[in-house]
Image (cartoon, rainbow, N blue to C red; front, side, top):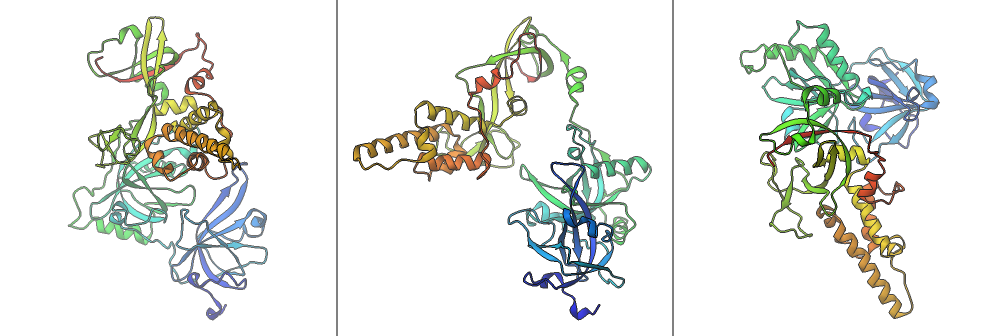
Length: 498
């Protein structure tokens, strides 16, 4: 096929349907149906031209039978007459292109025997650019490094795709990068280590990874099934990297071995039955030192007129207080009480801190239920409970129509004045009920309806507002229907002298 008739990826023209590309399939995976897990929804690909430009491509479900046995990963092809589709704005991108190729019935795919481009198309990103936030978070990254630390696979979810492996890699300069391997990628790494116990130098390449930010720290993750993982593969890039590790100026930490990161995660059985001893409530009134133990008891209720959430630092989830030392609703800056937090000032988010009364056959004790257990039992977040509380308060004052329909217009001046008063009252209830971070988002709202729309978008999105149940926090616990004879295992962590 004449080179003059070929189009390179940056030169594609979406107004034409007769373009011909010369491309290599450098990544290919099946996108499974969300509702039918064993059914293929589409075939997804990353294609590369001879200049190294990349673009995403897709074969929809109805056209899979036409192309499934033709397109193969690693193979170059002439692709004539594909269609184009726009990628969603502000979403994570595997390639720099805003368009993707779509294979339609009219698309012709012919095997190519003279492709002169790269085989894998790596675009490595320097560790420093990732760690310093120079590389945008919504763009994929390729990284390579020596494995210097490996943790155990965390299997806290029945879904294997949510199992993760934490590893640290290091470049030839001694700079380290942290990243997670999820699902099959985690087991691929574990299997390699198990099958090669004497090979303690492991060099990996993660292609099409995603940058993740947690508590101001950057790491790289595999991205669903779109990433590619190379482990000590016999390819030029890994061979050259290994040679660079053998140089005289390599940091001492770049050795032929890796350490095992001790796991801090415990199974529920280990946590309750092995690691911690069983105590009765009567035995824990006056602990003299920090300790951990298990109580088998029944939640009898929650303490009324007590705060059930706290303002948590969005960086470390420690307790935060207003920067000026006051509790002014309009305060936007906070100081975190956690001495290890990396931020001097921070914003806040509500997190559970529920005071509960627990009873066994020796006594009754007040304990605090924090975020993880609170969300597990209530099946919702503090934000959602705040929203329900606001809704209940407004309805109790017969003001809900002002939230749903806005302030009605009346010809009668007196009626109009009364409607504005009621709307202002509903707005005041919303303003007083929300936490400080959300308050700053509704300050521009002049009516109850405007403020409620802001809250609804924050909690559930624009047009996906779920039908919510209208119970208070106490009612949520009652709905657990916990009978007296039913027991709840409560792990009492870090109990100090009372």
